[in-house]
Each structure stands twice: as structure tokens, then as C-alpha cells.
Image (cartoon, rainbow, N blue to C red; front, side):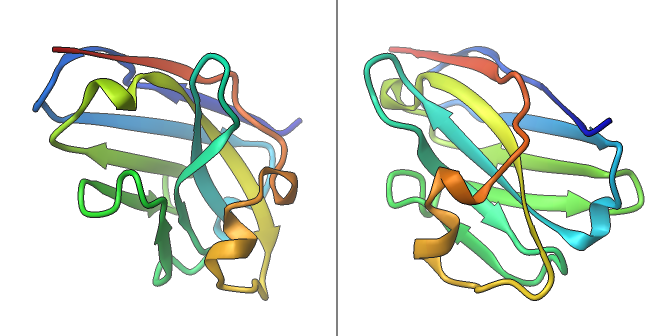
Length: 130
């Protein structure tokens, strides 16, 4: 059974840093693209960052570009999201998602579409206060 479990969310002050982690199981992790999306109340699901199966290609949403770094540890079947300079607008549920297998398209358009991902984790809440 494929499972994705997020951790690391919580309360943070504006300007602070935060590290989210996603633990994966039930599939050959190294062969799949992975991504972090976020969803705030009343808003569409939005790509935060994606990383290709090989780890050498990454993609970031405009809202977090320059403030976020996605990484993966294939030996541990984990993907991480390091964010800095947090803003109240970053408040959302952050979800870990599995993408496709190699070969991938390696385009932002492809990775920005939630329908290209699944299954999904339950999400972890990030709340940034000013």
C-alpha cells in the first residue's frame, strides 16, 4: 500500500524558517518524481516545489521561488521542503504527492498540474503569524 506521511508543520513567525518532511512507503521511491503542493482555504491547490526522480531537476512555484528548496533522500525514501523567510501568505496545508516514473517531461507546466500526481499524503498544516 502506497503511503505518504508529512511532518514538520506547525506555527511559525514571519521571517522564520521551517523544514517539512515526507516519508514514503509502498513503492520504489527512487523511480518517482515527487512534489509538495499547498492549499489554503478557498484557494486552488498550488505547486510549491517538485523534484524529478533523479534529483537533478527541480521546479518551484513563483510564490516561493528563492525561498524554498526541495530535496530527496532515496536511501531513506524521504522528500524534504526547506522554507525560509516565511510569510503569512504561506499559511496552508502542505501536501506531499507522488508523480510519474521516468522518463518525465521536466517542464513546469507538467509539474504544476495536480492531476499528474497521486496518491497524496494527508497534509501538514503550516501557519505563519506576523
